[in-house]
Image (cartoon, rainbow, N blue to C red; front, side, top):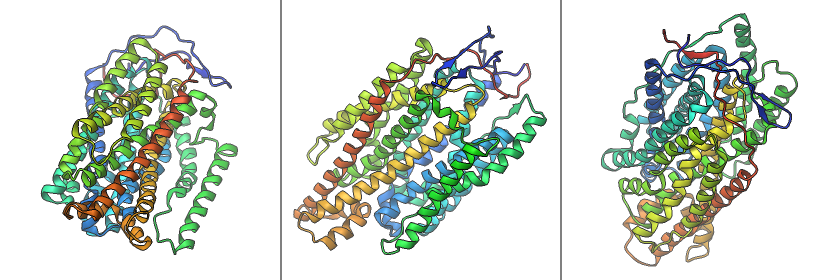
Length: 529
């Protein structure tokens, strides 16, 4: 018997209305072995490693911008490049893990992650830094994806709440401590030290218990689809260029959209082993889970990247103190993730918690809009505390919405789509947030004592402006710049609040799909009885 797995005679089926019906035979209880706990420990280490790296750069952006002489857009691309490369590589990695197994892909992703760290650590210019971050993103995205897929391989759906809650809490802990560690290294030593820290990746042996000729043939069919999947990813390869290079900006955008259209057309009409299982979207719960996790990730990374700007530019905190100031918004995520997982495991109900999570998040983002120049410490602590509670609930509950709407057979594809949309949301959150922030900075500065030309230059270098504001003496110029920062950030919070409101409305229409106690997987923990 393979440890960590349970089989059922018949997997749940999804009808044309998207409802899942289960016909389960009695199955043996889920009894984790020592090997399972060791494997799970490895997954928590991977989650901590990637979350630390993904968030440690946020408070160091002003220092990086000044060191590498980056504009506002180029600076945010250091964060966006990591997330964008993570998103574009997820679909082919998910397919490769199905064809070749989890372990080889996990090792390759860990190597890419390490190479990216080395390149970023020794970067002396914006181009080298962005290149390193993109390579890091490829590895980090794969590690995040394989982390979730392996858990679904090892744990029945009805029992996953406890384990997803722990993984979510570890991820949240890394996200909380990342800005503090990154700020400390960037402020006290050098921002390069932030990337030169040694990361160790552990690998768990996951074996396949149904290796046969059909599975070998699936390798060939899936590999044949990968070039088209990578072509689909080309739609995200439009980098920031100067506005006068219109052709160089539009050409990759048009080619990317054409590649995306061609990929979808092939997947729908010709692919024998499609990487993109569009049939999964027949269920409302499935479609909602993908939309909601994208909005959730958008808000989380928007807060991680833009709240530090408020603390550093408006409150004039150091990078370390700015990282600590994120605690009210992020420190609640870890305990709420665990609590939510335990509640869902006990009650088998995830709909109410999803609604509560979105209601709290929407309310909290509305409160964050009240952050102003004169907001006291006690006020901003409580204002930023509320959205963190909602985001912690959603991190775990949305995973149940997604996986309950799928069959065990399609679970790897389902998790791949879920992680893809979550990573896409992280990328969009930074990209859209930076665009809104930069445009509003220009409008706010132009409406004050600055000319249009001066406002344009200041808005383009707004992140670098943070360090300059700290050196200014109190006066009209400093007051105008700080006020512009506050008003621009308020528009960012308002936009996120509106998106959370849409997700809140959508959560009211979720269907009650039961959590299966039975479990079947063809990739399980290799462990002797």
